[in-house]
Amino acid sequence: MSIRRWFLVAVLLGPGTAFGYTGNELLADCKDRHAATLCLGFVSGAAEGFDLGFQVGFRRGAIQVPQREANMMYCMPDGVTTVQGKDIVVQWLERNPKERHKSAVVLVLKALEEAYPCK
Image (tube, rainbow, N blue to C red; front, side, top):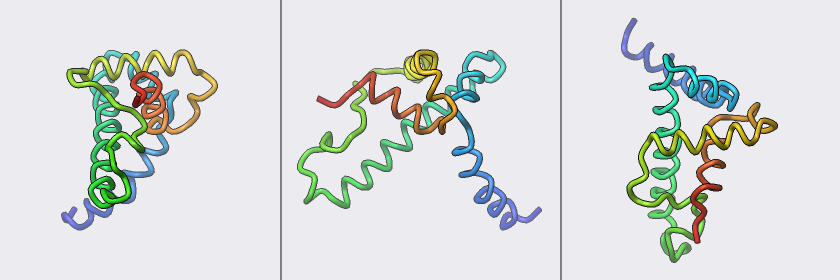
């Protein structure tokens, strides 16, 4: 398969796969020792993706937003590890079973927002 076709497959499957991945599936993967790497990667990727997206938006709108935390969903302190982030997400998912059918990306951000609110 050509590189162009692989790229098309990635574009077509990537977002649908990420947004179709629910909190139920994430929790199951986080509890399955064979899928632990997937769980850690997903939580880390969601958090880092949000942070990168916010920073790009912040740079573009720096005149309108006087401080970085003004619109942040969460403010994670320095030194928090990926494993800690995963643990926070797993605990949140266990405490909120009625939310688990929703997008895992959204739920990761909700869990981090609850654990590390900006002050």
